[in-house]
Length: 213
Image 1 (tube, rainbow, N blue to C red):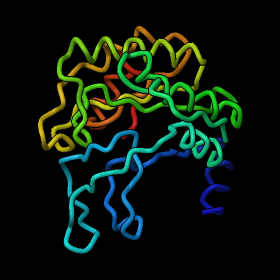
Image 2: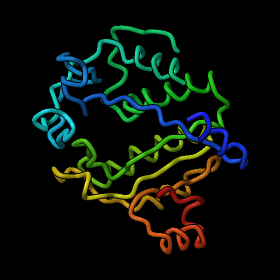
Image 3: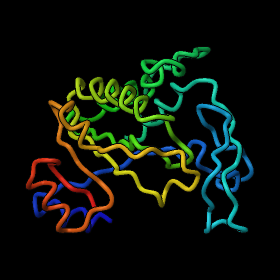
């Protein structure tokens, strides 16, 4: 891997690290029989782990007491104070957005703000996620994008709706380019369902700055 990194940097290119937490999209076999930690004890209903014995589905997670512990883990992998006994991470749009916004703050204590990227899937469907209506999607993501953009991150990456990752049908297709005008300080990446010609047209027409294949 070190040699690969040297080759990339020798050509004045960069490598992006994607920090992630399986949350409820996990099985107890991943953690030697221990329930996966998540923000809520709600089991995801779609998907199979074909590389695990018996190809099991998702396990019911155990709700974590303090989301800030996991903000700390993100910071340590790329660290943050711990706050217990709070319900300030659910309910309203502002509260539901708080976890990702505080995670970005913690990462910006480690890296330059322009080295931070956020990947969003407004249409949902992935891991049994969804907002229920296009109106709710636009309301939530408009707030979230404005708040994230004010933190002057490097770029957003938006995923097109993909039926392949929406086996339960909870997703609602929205046009990701609707959100582009909200972004004033970051680069706009578009992801999924592109071939070379479509990608070139998307960039050429100014719909996206970069295509991620």
